[in-house]
Length: 436
Image 1 (cartoon, rainbow, N blue to C red):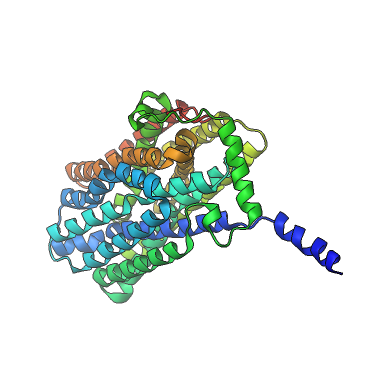
Image 2 (cartoon, rainbow, N blue to C red; image 1 turned 120 degrees about the vertical axis):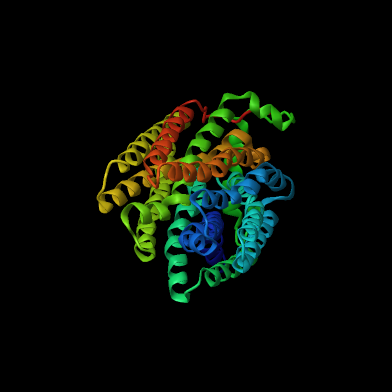
């Protein structure tokens, strides 16, 4: 009897893997969505804030870009912190701090005080993506990192979608952008506490991971290590001797120009060009950003399944990035020539659906940097994107102001960035780790 029980139960328990790694990345997806809800809140509230504080378009662009000053400055330090102190502590501390700054922004009474809270928000959010890239390297197998990357980055359009409609709804329901900011900040602090409770740095540390799942992940990592050049213990600056690092940075910068254009100016564009009110604008923004979220999740699934079936990393990534860049660029170019608001929203949905395929770039820290340097490479990549984040809101604000309120030049500027993305993505070697 006891032999029957042993044969029926113990092998089944040992052979069936738990799926904790996917739950970890669903938690990261949730956290990134909260990140972008907070980030998008200023854009959604900007028409009201601009009126209350009597801000010009250039001043609005300055305020929208201020987040990225400290966010960019802290990218590489944040990645190095994740490499040294492990991602769990970095993610939890980052989330709690940015929730604090989001909440106290509600008390701003001048342009300067609101600017200071945005600087604090940027600095505290900065380590999140590099730490997420580190988790992707530690928890996912090579053929799962496409989905890991898009779950990590998919929170951006999901949070922007939810932020657009949630913050707009809170503002309308409460009659105050300030109360909406307080609620968003307190919710973020709660999310940070929960992530500390659930996230672990490695599979073996997590109480819910069984031996089968841990061994599956570790075996995949051993196989990856056996086919990669070993780390040489060199200085991190040696990464910049390689074309793939520069291609990664330039491609992510082009992506940053396009997506920051959406995040910073989409609500004001819809309001100015098509006369949307805050409710209609919130609904349209929701559809556009949800299209981006769906596109990103689809891209992760396609990339991993293609690689599972024998597709080489270079063939998979170059094909997908090429298709994405061309369609996203042509769609945003076409928006400049349409006057029908429905057609414009459809084109914007199409553009963001394919633009978000570039979320697969978050596979690159693990591919190029390996598990040891994924945080640093992720921080370096995201720094290049944040250079766009700093400049694009100001550039577009100045373009709109100089053209008397027209967004034509801004849309052409974003389309040009799509061309840069295409060229840069074709220069990267996606097949091997850089031996630094």
